[in-house]
Figure 1 (cartoon, rainbow, N blue to C red):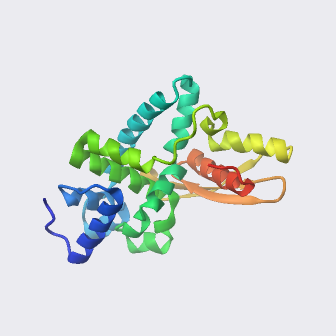
Figure 2 (figure 1 turned 90 degrees about the vertical axis):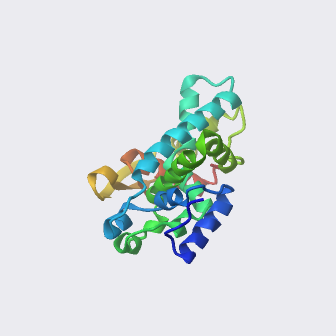
Figure 3 (figure 1 turned 120 degrees about the horizontal axis):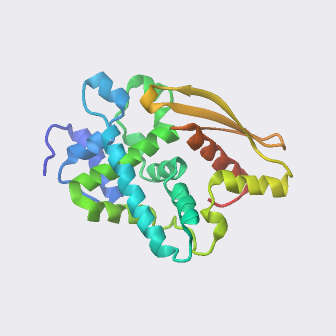
Length: 238
């Protein structure tokens, strides 16, 4: 196994993550790359995780689509699409990343870290996809699929639970109409970062005076994350 070129401390941390993933890499450098943010790569002239993120996104969508197809035989295409969108959303990926403590593991530039990058949902969600891409390259589809099934083991909605197949914004609209007799309002606040990796911030306002601010890799993702936060405030299960 290729484990040369890393400090003992880095190898220890990577090994701890392997334990949480329940997967041991043949080429540990793939995992290190998956954890390397572009800000670190720019400072240290090394490779970042964006290509692995691209690959992991495709691997995740295929496996989640396949599982939805098996678990929900009565669901029509539109419902399957909405359910997949929720299960691979930035918020869900960030949740998975936090369960693995990926934020603590990232190789990140000083400026990005100072701005709270280790807690930023868009950033750790991207890292989660990159890790899946790394496992796919290292162990093939079988190992990547097994990891995805472990990560989602307790996160699949029950068959026949229609509301769970709807995205966060749709569900929040239904909740606010029923409880507040009004609709939520979404307002873009800002965007930052390079064109290929922008982060968007939005504010969601409810008629009862509560507001929620969220970030995402696109305006749509940021709005979905804000809606998820609002649903949690209403006590609506994810």
